[in-house]
Length: 504
Ligand SMILES: [Zn+2]
Image: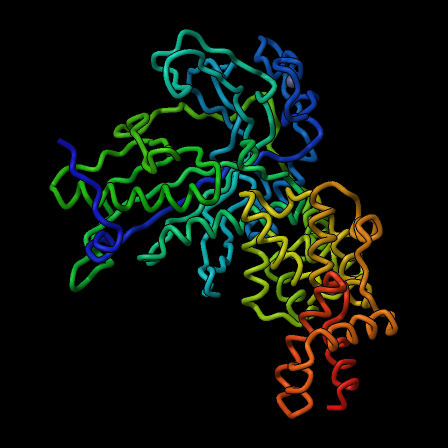
């Protein structure tokens, strides 16, 4: 009988969690790590292969310099040390996705050693995550298990192997254990992967699409009992390693779920097994994979077909000087330039709106207007449809055009929302929609005055009240005029004209 998971808050009251994350990032080089095959995603299976990445006997690897450059740039951005000699090694294991029966990777003096990433949480607290190292390696091929359940090898009828992925350039970033996060453990884990993804995108070394597997994270987690004194001397228990978690949300939920599961076991006196586990979105839990009770012997030895990387220090300095503005610094600069608070910038980042707002500002809108549309009406529509902002059928240029129409007084906010709806429905740019639907502010005073006089005649008692000093009653007349002009008048102007007509 396996113990039930413990409630998260109770688990954190009783246990102290530690976690570490290994993230695989597929580099966006034009060719693979050790052969000239292209790396295009989604090509028909086994069309991007050669003797080297098929593991045919006698084929020799040739190292891709662009991949080395990407790895070093990442290391420099993380504050890592780049060793003067960084060799490759063979890691042996037997699996159909590994044609050579070994993987070319690094284990001694990997390309980036040490470093850190400062991770900002939703409330602005910053947690420093120390990086142990990052190493380069080739990806394995991709197995697809046919038949059986849930795409697992067990119970499958047969397995298809796509070698297009074999030899794709990867960098694996390994954190040091992250301690002391307590109840925020899952939030910090998620924020770390989010920050790393942001960094990778800023460096433009990967498209970092978690849903396509070009960035995937393994979450290691273990617990130790909380004691009154000398907490630091209490060892952590056995850890689990949840493999290939492929969304930020899943990282947070998988970490949380492991805290609850392990706490339940420990409280019931049952052992936590050292093993790999798989995350299942549908059941909100992990299930066991391979046991890691006994460390596997990969029989590492230096790769004899590749000379070690010996980067020229002058080249490293050149790469350092060429680093782009890093995400945290950029956010601080944008906050300053746009006159937004840290909180507002964080909200924009969390909503996936920062780049869109930036592009809209670059297209000519004010930051306030760009933020207002992306974080307001468009966020509402995206939320309603259950999609990301970037998936909406509207561009930053469209939003800038809309903001200009409002700023020029050609559209009220209400009309602008109608124009936006038209654009989202594929009717063209906001200006085109406004023209086609006849959306325009009625600013012609004579047309407005005619509508006002009509309303005053229709509501003599209200007009009398306003004249008698009940100025707030004017709202009813404004409403009638707005209705008569189908919302295309500027309400403030209408109010002004009515007031002068009534002499108040
Ligand atoms: Zn190849």
